[in-house]
Length: 115
Image (cartoon, rainbow, N blue to C red; front, side):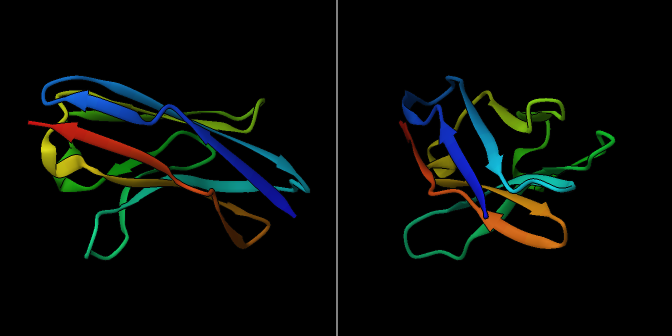
C-alpha cells in the first residue's frame, strides 16, 4: 500500500501564491508519473499538472505559466508552486502517483482563492 500525505493548502487572495507538497511512503516500487488533480464543487476532477520520473512536465492550459510542478525522486515527493492565483483555482487539490502500474490518491487539500 502507498500512502500520500499532502500539505500546503489554505486561503489566499487573488494574485497570491501557495505551494503544495505531497510525500509518498509505504510499498513504493517504481513511481513513474506523479501529478496534481483538482476538483471544484459541482465539477469533475481534472488534471492540473503531472511530471514523469525524468522530469518531463505537462500542464492544463488553464494553469500554464502560473503553476510549476517539481519532484524529488530521492524523497518521493512532488510539489506544486502556484502563483498568480485566481478565484477559479479554488478547489480540492489531490496528489496522485502511479506506482508499479497502480494509481494512488492522496486525501486532498483545500485551496481557496478569494477575490
